[in-house]
Image (cartoon, rainbow, N blue to C red):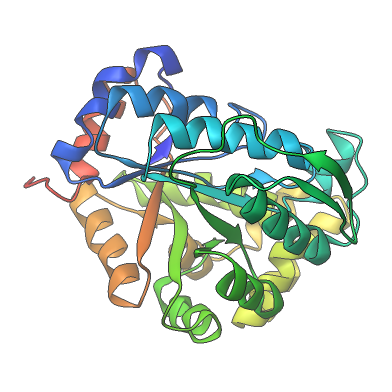
Length: 318
């Protein structure tokens, strides 16, 4: 499950998060875009549940300096020894440049350099090195974690997927259908854990779910990295009319050019039991860890969120 859950203030999510293992959830992964930061929800979850594996998906490698990123990861690794995965990624030019005023340069190299620095730093080494995209002078964690966290890398295309498979513990991906999983797995190889956030809108109102999903798809698939990802997956022609309308400033027209088949491919929707079956298809296709990103129908209140979380759990019987 993705934390924090929508609608409910983070401080009021303790009961639901503590109950996740009993509902069949094994993991809780955060996100970091323009809401909560990626670490705080997991710090709380580490205190509220002693069973959940916790992961960041993802922390951008540009918006925190290498040393600060290592310190934050070490803190959480100490709070949840042996059950924290530090997921990092390049994020996007909007988040890095437009929102944080940092140049989005050489993303592959920055991801590679950060992976290599973190592996050494979290093991307690003192580091003085000129990496191709940053330099570090005399950094050492004051208290390295007794159990260093696993490190995962967000990857959308073959070059980055191969980097993640070679130098990280897991590959994190996003916005794909079950039939896309084998293509990603073929590049990652059999030895890498494959993690993906799956957006789930649990409502039997297909028209409502598709309207919500169209807005999400347009927002993401007009980002160059995601557009290139879906070109590689074979959806370039299907998405081109939407992207062209968006680029021309026709937002309404862009939404209209996203057909139902594309929506149904990329966003899970339907009654909760149907959503559970669809998520299971991802696992059957080779995905190790599906992370539900809950997209509740408008008007869902906190009690409704708790009910949806329960119904989507692997241990649900209804």
